[in-house]
Image (tube, rainbow, N blue to C red; front, side, top):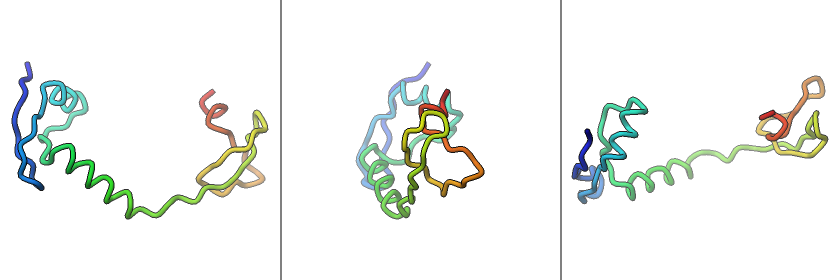
Length: 90
């Protein structure tokens, strides 16, 4: 149903392959547009955006179930339980 397709990167102008497998993935996710950038340029943009984001402050807490210490991205309150990732998933 899908065939590999050669596209030209919007940023660097190099040709790249939009594989049949990638096209299938895009269709499964409901993406309607083809990628405009090659993988290297997409990765570069992601890295640039990541550096611009402020680092999230983490707080130390004690899990209400197992008693282990864990890091959470919010200020724990005395009136609300906090769970580590493992206990939260259960």
